[in-house]
Image (cartoon, rainbow, N blue to C red; front, side, top):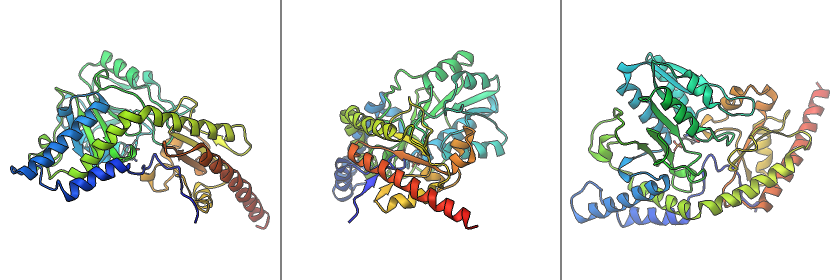
Length: 387
Ligand code: PMP
């Protein structure tokens, strides 16, 4: 049997046993509706409250500032449409980056259709966004700025603090949002110290369950709800709560808070080893900047299309990604925004680590990548010569 070598942790992570156990208990024992007034309802509500405190502790914010959602896609949509609708009379300009996750990018595209002007700041050749470019794009009409914390294809860490300070200095009452999905539990940040109005997070990137996320909203900020029909989550997210998912998220947050530093050290070891084995080697181009978060390494093998390499690696049980999982194989808008050559974009692989990866697994991955490069490139040359 081939062993499982999973290097697609930016797409999703394995649910931690502690999270799965907590969820099973919710599903089979604490199954009451959290809104019910009897003791089964109270039991479920108590556990949701605990999960909210666990996430709040990881984010360093007050638990009541958090709204649980079905994931970060919903959180991003809720905040962008909700903030734009609440500020419509104050202006119509939105500033974001050219390489946000599709749940921000496509929400912005929809807002454009509804009459908003969206300015997208492009990354430089190294994949970095300049804070002064973002601040420079803010004008009198700007109502909303949305910049991710860590890019999900490169691992690039955006200068959020600098952006927040610069934007606030220029226009105090702007609504500032950050998609922190790839940063949560991996990049230390404290919401009590960051003057952000809203932050989106997701459980399944930190060994929690899929289908659960949250939106943080700073005290005093206002957005309009997107759906109606219940009192849950202070009416921002009506509907019976995904109690098991929320409790699993809480358990994953607790694990991250306790072990996050140690997890990141293991991730760093694997990332450094892969960089060491691939950098300078003929036929490989690394796109993730040196100072990126070590969870992600984006690399191209020009001449070998991503999907072809992906399937070659599969024979060894290796899972990597050809870009963002949500793009389902479409050409990367992230690498396109960086202005990379087509051959590098078409052959890009996103390798993403968790603490469950080992250096030995990483060495196997490097070996398989080299074998794939040699055999797939020579197959390509032969095909060309027989044309
Ligand atoms: N934002 C970023 C940066 C992501 O990486 C993802 C997950 N691909 C999302 C948002 C969407 O999160 P979810 O899967 O919870 O909807």
